[in-house]
Length: 163
Image (spheres, rainbow, N blue to C red):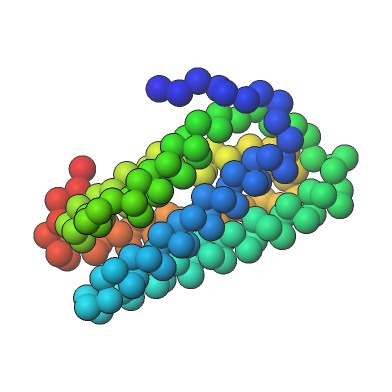
């Protein structure tokens, strides 16, 4: 269990971490798309996930620009940055594995990553800091939930055990 590592951080710091995670996830899915290029279903799944996370990174960058222009409109937030740091470490570990994990191991790793990134926690804090961007943040959360469903459905269709 992690403890709150940083209290009263600026919303721009929270957005920096969220952007890094979204960007690194998009890069991970791009890598996986190439890694499993002989499996059309897997390639399609990873291409869709890459597109979603790359779009999210762009949205977060846009939010950062808003924050920079209107700093006084945003309050500071209490966040535990450890889960985002752990997510970035897991992404790096997956990409550095030699040999890379097989698809049967990769899908559970991706679902694990989805569970502990706690992006939803960050998004709630960002909404609290400025409720005006709630719609944008909530649409990202909905996309992430759909991605999790897609991964679970893929696993089920392939007989890949998940916990």
